[in-house]
Image (tube, rainbow, N blue to C red; front, side, top):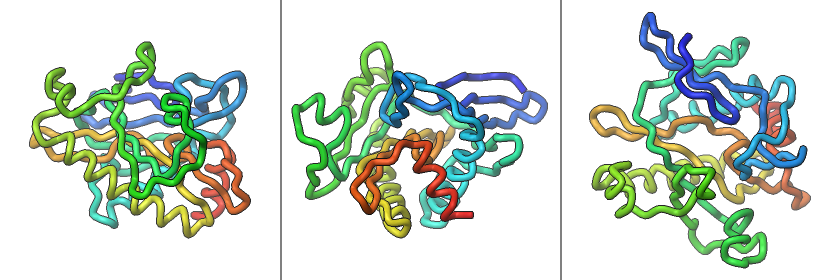
Length: 228
């Protein structure tokens, strides 16, 4: 397969013979100085088998989203090969963030204590740009930069909110409280929008029954044990 893009935790591949697109889930994990953190912009290390675990978890949650009428790019998965077959879409360089509690970068940016509950979910959109520190971006700027068309920003936020509802309830059934998460959203030639990339502990923070926040490696194994 032809490599289209090599990211921190996944590689995008194209089967040139049939024009099908796949994501290969790597064993790498984000973090710094050997400490894993889903909110980090750097690779903090590698864990054998992480890719297949992440693919299994992502498959579960993408299928759950589809059952709840939330469109995703997921088409199929080969766990043994570590690849997910996906729709070929345009994916803007944006991350859509939903926060139920204050945590991570928000606390650093606005000098807030960790763990404050929002009365309603707090939504943010950031430009994926490591050099600029993933700055916040507005609908108007997205249109000025020709990243999104009119109406797509609000449509993406609506999808983000729906994903949050489904994800929050599913994790609550596993005795986990969702703190925050981020997703990517792509669109097809007709402008229809889909949840893309992955839905794994690499994109969220949760709190367990004891109030601890497990890293993405431990959280993925915990969820794997519950869904298999």
